[in-house]
Amino acid sequence: MAGKVKKAKDKGRQAPNDGLDKLGKKAYLTELETLQLELIKLQEWIRAQGLKVVILFEGRDAAGKGGTIKRITESLNPRVCRVVALGTPTEREKTQWYFQRYVAPLPAAGEMVLLDRSWYNRAGVEHVMGFCTDEEYREFLRSVPEFEAMLLRSGIILVKYWFSVSDEEQERRFQDRIADPTKRWKLSPMDLESRAKWVEYSKAKDEMFRHTDTEQSPWYVVASDDKRRARLNVIRHLLGLIPYEDLTPEPLALPPRQHDAGYVRPPMAEQTFIPNVY
Image 1 (tube, rainbow, N blue to C red):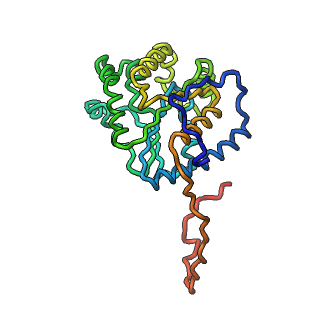
Image 2 (tube, rainbow, N blue to C red):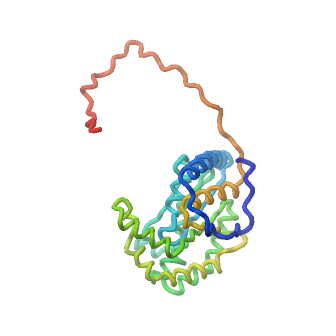
Image 3 (cartoon, rainbow, N blue to C red):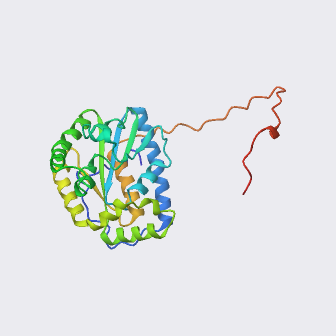
């Protein structure tokens, strides 16, 4: 796929996958394996060329951002590809320049950073829930195109994904999380409150796009009602945005293990092993 994936068109605009059947698990896993191999090639290209890549993942709660991030990173080197998910700002951070805490995690040469939510919190949850003033919100909308232009001029490759999920599918996923104890931690009171403010969040997203969906830093919208299709589409799109070459090294040959030359190791009985429960 290296050198063969066509570069994504300007806005990547196309109709969502309405009416398509859910992608089967077998077909999904087969394609995912192929794409994850290409991600490894992209990773090595980023490292070798000293590229600096930042990918933003935004969207409604339960839209599928976390699952997509996990599939992108699970085969990659964490020293090259990092996930950043900042928590609630501290009292000290609240007094800083708004973008300040998002600057520290930005990549050095040869790194790719995936932001699970980003500075766009101000245009979404902070604005809708009243965690910032109207002036702070308006200043953010004025400032963010300039901030992103600075990042681009510094040599950073900035990619912004918005995950779009329908009301019905979000409801189904919320109910699934409530019913499954292993997923219940994913729901917070803020997530539940967002259901009561669905229209306000829609208005905030549209206003955010009006100010920040620019030619130099566009938003790429991901139709995410089908999680499997969304994950594959995002990975393929990302691979098409950054031209790369295959730098996969040749297979290595293991050298012979050093001879013990009469060395006697301590008895294993002196070591503390965990119980063999299984």
